[in-house]
Length: 206
Image (cartoon, rainbow, N blue to C red; front, side, top):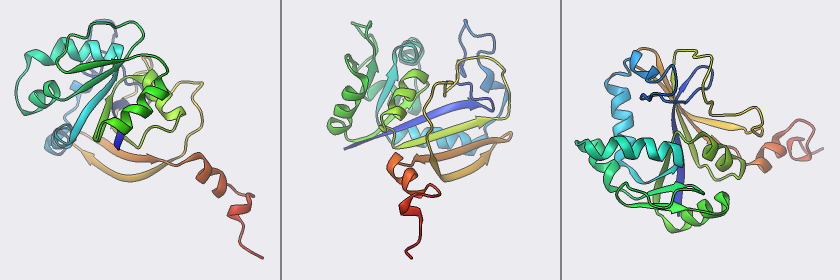
């Protein structure tokens, strides 16, 4: 059984768009203004080396596919070699090595993938995909590398229509230039409801 791990570079106001560059977003490459230090670099390297597969939305996939095949090194070699699954209704011929397109109902396809693919299935970027995965309780862990900047505009990880989700903080650390890394596990909806004030499960026996 695989585990879905969502990992994001994110601003204080929730923006995840183009952290590593791009031409269409005016703040593209905004993470480069900050040094995440050796601990931050090690966190990302360890995360990648422990990944079994990538799960991406089409836009993020196409950005990665244009950049990573020409790079080398331990990080790039792992990225390029591991299985990659891209959720798309329009992509038919993925060009990146070892890529598979998932079509149809997203939640159903990802649930099947979790049963088929062992190990950590890591999601980068892919805001709409992440929102869908959270909505259907398919995320096992959420890792946010929070940069101390407010961008004011850009694609956000959580939209105004996102459902309420309770998360449990499992780890936190500060690296480099005040970059904070928070690791969360989603709390199942039933557990949240049971713990709510006034619920039968939250009352002590009389």
